[in-house]
Length: 143
Length: 377
Image (cartoon, each protein chain N blue to C red):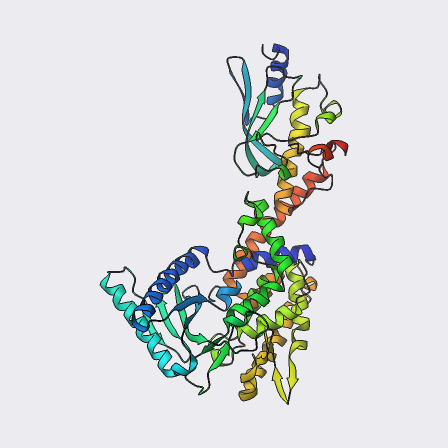
């Protein structure tokens, strides 16, 4: 089993807006690798090497985002879970933030983009931006 | 041009302070030389005097307030105390000083015989012996013996008698006790800095030693000491001594987390902690009410005059900077107070960080669909 060709076409099309990210496949396993740029008005503020894994059940299952350049401490308070993937939002919020049927482009431009911007802000100011963060574990789900 | 706000002033002073720190590679090199000397002196003392001895850091080296030399060609001070565990009655200041000098001469001989790549140069000062390691750093080694009768309120067991060629009576001191007091005054700030560093360096807080972090108070003292060094370059006799600046600054510090505000608080209040006792000026040791760090002021009034002149000029140079125009205008002014190279390099980094912060703020403000990252474990 692997993601549908329609879903993969959507991913390919979405990556046209992100020329520094490329889609790779290996025996029906799909992943994206490359440089994520945090920008404002096309000025690059920070760069991260990233990998996004698409599971066999994509898009039902969320893509997993990994930061590979080690610029982000792999700790819960930086919203990296023990497996090393980014905690982009609480699972229950998916239906609001990126419901099934949404384009992969929306996934990149909203939760992924916000996640890395949050990291840049935190690294500079040692605190979360005004839009905040959710707590960890059950506390975060209740919020 | 717009005046700088407090956040920008903090950012600028933060960059300046980083240029005042002695380079870590140099400190590491000095640490290794110190450890080597410490081991050698201990063995030499056991062999030749059948007594224990201990070499340990003191002064700004222990307090974390060392400042890079004004000229890049100058070396930095690495202050040490060498305590020989013998009774006061069994020696004299002169004998102790001579014996320590002989030990250091034997150390140099040993270094030569073992073909050490770097043989320091040994010289004698009025209180201490100096080992000079080229143009990089020098170790001031202060001979001492235990003073178990001192009336210290902290670390009584670490009181020492020290030698001084110019004085007939033994002088007393307690560098470890003073360090304990100094660090106790900023305990919360030390812990906050350890948490920050742990977050930034992927480590656990308990793995960050206290001396790895710098508090706002330590940074403010470094800035004031650099200003003092520049003001008294070439006039060392009357240069206000570090322990007076450190003590008065610590009393005046209001636990603010802003470096700029800390400088305002310190400079505004430090004079009020100079007291008068029996017609004399006193800067009382915080761990020994009978010890006056300003005792020389009474003998040499020009030293008090020099301190007050420095304080007055430092106030003029550092107070109210938020009304002094743009970063460039302010930097021109600060170059005179803290050195051209220090401020020029800090200004460059300040500008880069200011641009970065503006971009981040604009990017954050332009987010139309905020999503909160979440940690589940």
